[in-house]
Image: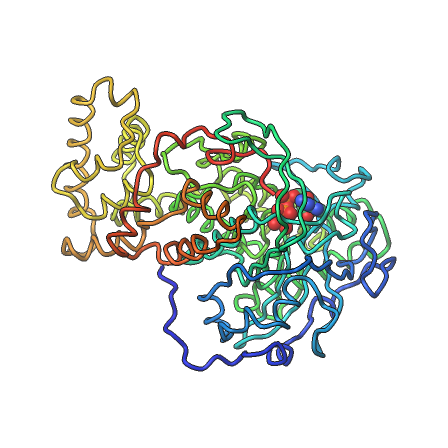
Length: 576
Ligand SMILES: Nc1ncnc2c1ncn2[C@@H]1O[C@H](COP(=O)(O)OP(=O)(O)OP(=O)(O)O)[C@@H](O)[C@H]1O
Ligand SMILES: [Mg+2]
């Protein structure tokens, strides 16, 4: 679960020229380009894209870029020298200027179209043309694919300017949302949750855009002011950025027979997805029908594990539409996400997200996305009855697999080998009534306390607890006694208390994302001081470590009351 790699002594990529030698553009070279696009990528105005898997687009550089941060962990994994992040050519490229990249790097990047389903219902209205042909990467532009240490990575700028899918918006991301996405991706990775990774983050010293936001201390649901914010470009990296919504776009076209190559384009994309994300588990010599069945089984397995992991660490995606659901089964799009401090099954950081995407409803939301994924694959098996039946069984088995993964996850959080429904149910009630701080509670429990004293550190002691705290404490004590008898009885092999504690501490992080700690980091960054961003980066990339007393006092704390129910902090309606 701890993903820190040992220091590598000699990075292999010290300059942009070194990186260029690793460039290899499989998507651009194997999939279809939009036939109406200008090959030089200069076409940025919103328009309908009727076919093809990608549109060549050159990013629009941000003015006067300044280095904010890079992921030291990820640089080390890739064999990149830290100095690269501040070197002139690298900064130029990853702040959106491809005009001088060394060959065989290309001066044009690409954006892709995708469709949108919300909780299993197809939508078209979000597209300005109401056809779905104008929806896709509106401000995300991929600029490089490279094979590094035997693994293929796609590098994508977020906030890299308008693309034909920009829907009339500016194509930019502001510093605030970029800092959040940058930190969150590396935090999630360190938590052991599959995710797109952060490479680098640059801010413009001069270019600004307006965004709706909350006035100081606002308790309104919706933003009440427009603020001017610096634009930034963060680069995120993944084996691919193919989304469930992307498969849906091509499946919708195939279903409606929108053009003669629609079915073939769907198949090409599915095979490309397998090649990018599933090559290690799906044999290339199989037929397409066989591959599709294996793909569905593997994606089901990854998606269910992913969502169980999200819940393990307190993460809520907030807007788990099919276009925010990576087909490789990892976390993608850190927009309206949040982590629950105060345990609340219905926690939802985004006021536009609705209860269907709330914290403990994520397994159901995932099933809706899986349903859309399944429906998008079905046309490919129309003449393979056997495979189709297998695919349908995989679909109908989703809820059961999800349930099993959830029970395994809760058991692991509680240090048990098998899930105990009665123990868990009483705990759920108690956690809600205290209510507990989700992270602190499970971490304190991992210390296997003698009495409820340490657990009380996690109690917010709100009205339902305060009304009868003596009785509540009695129930907690009874629960703890029962838990203790189970941890010894439930284990397949006897474990020492120290060993059990050690195992639980690898499942229950000590440090998790706390929005009230992140807000000052992006506020100070807006004033040109990036030290807190870097401090948080350090703390949050070692979430299972005890860390220093100083770090503990600062970050292992209950949410201060003045931060609850504050717009832009406890929740937001605009996250971008
Ligand atoms: N400022 C913007 N300019 C252009 N397009 C935008 C902008 N903000 C959002 N979009 C587009 O609107 C759609 C929905 O927004 P959403 O918040 O899910 O995406 P995002 O955070 O930009 O993207 P991603 O899913 O790539 O992380 C996306 O297709 C996105 O590209
Ligand atoms: Mg999105």
